[in-house]
Length: 120
Image (cartoon, rainbow, N blue to C red; front, top):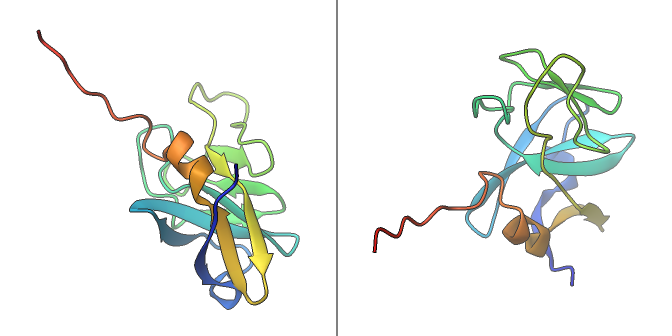
């Protein structure tokens, strides 16, 4: 079941730019695509470089470090890259605020599942 939470004002999102936000202690990123918010993991799946300096063109996010491109509607990486897809999260506009589904973030955390080592 969706658990949408307020993360920031809509005016904080600038066309073409990536904006960080926090939800339940997790850092995610947001961008505007055709006037709608897109929420995704804030670190590149390649080597965990920050995507904050990335550019958004159309529905593609360009990693500022490796120049890989990610489709912000599917999370798929551009041809030639052997990395995981970008994790995406449902986002919506509520009045003049942006909300993100906290349940989706909990189920698929931006940094991946935490590993607990059991040596017994």
